[in-house]
Image 1 (cartoon, rainbow, N blue to C red):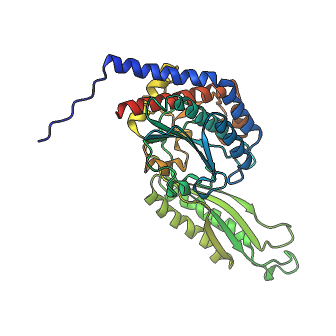
Image 2: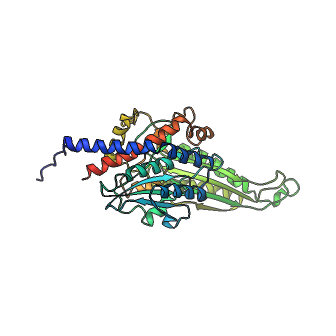
Image 3: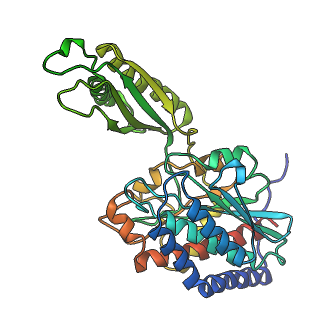
Length: 395
């Protein structure tokens, strides 16, 4: 029988050295305070939706180059992605930046904070690159809100050979764990035949009715769906005039589930609801997935606990026992796909927004308050400090 490994005991000297490094990265973030808040405010004032984040990428790349990073724009073959690196060490650590906004809502998910915190953590940890044999990487990832930019970057090797990858996300409450759903994003379209709704209704094939039948079918299906599933969407188009039978209808939908397997099974059932609309009305129809599917998140427990311990030093209770944190940490993110390949965490930091929550218009306003600035600066500090913990623990 192989003897069980004894828990590693850190010497007082090593403990002091670790604490000293963590104080140093906190100092770098403090020194960068105005710059980091400026990054957050600039992105917030200039929101760009998925795949259109050209100005955001240019701005962030310039800020990182000014801090000594080499920046490659177009990483993974995506025009609005980038990889910034500093240091030449053998050990690679990545901080993930998101910067896309929501259609019609601006930065109502707080990606301005995510990007600024990722940049701040990168700058802070890069100050230790020579001492810790590091290459520090800030990965700029587009189209988290329904495009899945991280997934082609993952497949292109952008996240290869990393010790770990980390990011923070603003929300109404602190929580160290990400528990997101797997998700499929898709568009549905119906094609019918237009006719005068009063004079020649019998000549029409009503595409709007097809979408309505599908929505009713989905509403009835929900009674038989498990609590681990979500189905939701919007109708983008369903005719142009009330006296003309609509010849086309378009909608955008999400199906979420607790695993990729459950996602596939649920999507098949939901697809039959859309098919029912076509059968009932005589329309033709199509369903097109608009991004790669997002996977569930695999939390790295040692990193999560280190983050929570560091956060406690700053007065944040990261809720290791998950006493009803819920909410935002059960949304969906393409960071889940990264976590299936690389050690990763995705904690949530409160910006004191309640009763307003993510994806409400008021959350965009909350994302540039003093509480949001605090979350940004503490997020950058905690990411860098947790990286120190993770690197030293792995020695």
